[in-house]
Amino acid sequence: MALVSVKEMLTKAFANGYAVGQFNINNLEWTKAILTTAQEMNSPVILGVSEGAAKYMTGYKTVVAMCAAMIDSLKITVPVAIHLDHGTYEGALKAIEAGFPSIMFDGSSLPIAENIAKTTELVALCQAKGLSIEAEVGPIGGEEDGVHGKGEQADPEECAKIAALGVTILAAGIGNIHGIYPPNWQGLDFERLAAIKRRVPAVPLVLHGGTGIPDEMIKHAISLGVAKINVNTECQLVFAAATRKYIEAGKDLDHKGKGFDPRKLLAPGYEAIKASVKEKINLFGSANRA
Ligand code: 13P
Image (cartoon, protein in one colour):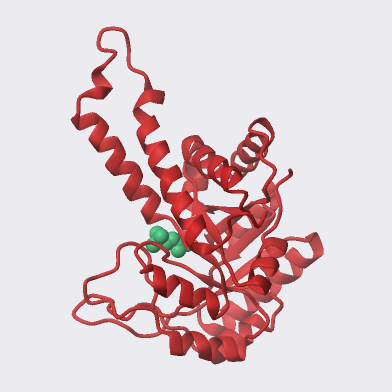
């Protein structure tokens, strides 16, 4: 199956009360782990690509070519989207030119008028090319003693303005945070999510910062219109932990004198990512929805 945009899979998820996971990729091993797990679970999947990860993998064209070739050679039949994660305006244009079927333009740090202007331009471009686009509405408030205990909080009115531009999906802060949640985190703000949903009833919502949110909160968020959940840090953590364990057990030295085999060194991390993605697909409810 060729790479697809997120539109169809997320429209289906939104209508049927489940979410599709976006798992960020960094290299061949991560991509293969996520693709093979989605196939085993018969689940649609989104491969998230940050600008930094795209640069690391030598550019957007390499990412598109690697993912397309891997889908073919691994005989992946479930729907797979590649999606630019937190793209700048320039990054979005480059990803589109390289063949990304789906992009996120993150204008959340811009003044709302500029976010609207740039999102409007990119929506027109994506619509003309049949691509999907995720926009983000600026975070408000939330710092206490230098620790963001409340997380990002989007303004429902601004969400309505950005959604009305014709975006495919909308990322709106409801107390979520990228990376590890601080000990004083107050949890997802379901009142805010419900308020956003009232103002934006027809656009699937995206929950960033999917690492470390309690399962019950994830399920509640899905019931209130979240149809895409982004996970990155968790894959990094399990990959690092599995690799560390392997090295600390001295197993990377098995071939001392005969050369070093990076495929063996990366295997435990690969399996750890597969287990983590499997768990998330079960939690998000996208298994057997391909
Ligand atoms: P985490 O790194 O917290 O899982 O968040 C990922 C994300 O939201 C990417 O956009």
